Image (cartoon, rainbow, N blue to C red):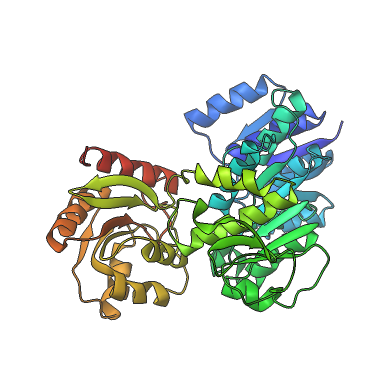
Amino acid sequence: MPLSIVVGLGRSGLGAARLLQAQGHDVVVLERGDTPALQDTAHALRQQNITIELGRPLELDSFTAWLDQASEVVISPGIAWDHPTLNALRAQGLRVRGEMSVAWDALSGIPWIGITGTNGKTTVTHLLQHVLAHAGLEAPMAGNVGHSAAELALEVLQGTRPKPDWVVMEMSSYQIEAAGEVSPRIGIWTTLTPDHLERHGTLAAYRAIKRGLLERAETPVLNADDADIRQHCGAWSRPGLRWVSGADDGPDKDSIHRISVNAQGWVSQGERPLFPADALPLPGDHNRQNMLLATAAALEASVSASSIEAALRCFTGVPHRLEPLGSVGGIPVFNDSKATNYDAAAVGLRSVQAPVVLLAGGQTKQGDADPWLELLQSQVCGVVLFGAGAGELADLIETAGFSGPVMHHADLNAAVPQALSLAKDFEAGSVLLSPACASFDQYPNFEARGDHFRRLINAVKDL
């Protein structure tokens, strides 16, 4: 039997190991950690005849015992594609691929919808899955959201999940670069702004990874309202290409396939009106773009316009993405914990009622903060900062000449009461958690940060 070495015992590694074992591979999992929780996971996998080696760092010596028998190494998204140890393994003739690649092979014959982009991909994934399910299609979502791709593939393989009509797969740049063979039936590109540059090095490299997925898609769907996608793909001409836009100009404006919003405020396919553009009850221009992208893909999947409209009207949104939490003292509060960079945080500021009391902070990331700082001047009446990046953000905000109060607190426990007090004093239009930072200084992920914020607001919100 072929031997596969899986690196990492997180969700992706666990899914890949189980899937490969179910497909008849001998599997060895190498994990650098050795905690009690990992020991429990390892014990369960050993009962399934999967070899687990804890305390094995990502160094060539950790692989030595299996190099003669192994045919491939499967990595989790968190491992850099150009890690020196992976390059050394390639030099020895081993295939290196990601967990998404393993799932692609296992789900052969089932059409994929691959969704990528700097911002918006999670909302589009949830929205499209909702639209397809509302139409009666079996269309589970996985990848960078929900199940790992391999976990989903294993359920299908074992028959514990019905064979899907479609797979709706959210794909990060990390997952795409480690699965170059994934060629979705439909590909969606939501946005492109600088992100993950500490991993990919340059914006051009990051863009090329995203574009690669769309080039392999049978029907690429592109957002013409995104400046970078429009600039770099506006002249891209290939069979099956679909553009969406909230405006009447831009690429492919005369195409009968183009999904846009007409002068009467209707979503249209070419000249054919489909349904009112206010069918999706979520605020912000970015959510209109998300709706158009999901609509274009659903039409390609043969869902009727009437079914799409009905599904949009009952979509309640995605947690941690401008999630309304109710009000405190009559002032609406929103959880936008998913806004882990300046561009995403700027979208949040444009989407809620000003003046805004803003909660921001966490682990800072590279990126252009200028548009975000400009919005602070026009939209925000006060800023409450928290977490490891509070000092760095305060320097940026004060250097930009922001005239309102800027306050620091160690964590959300202290920051939230301060923000609510400011909101009352300024008669703010809204309170917004939109951190512009990663969560890893104080939380395992942005979901945990958003959940904490929700609990704090639920304890004091209006009944």
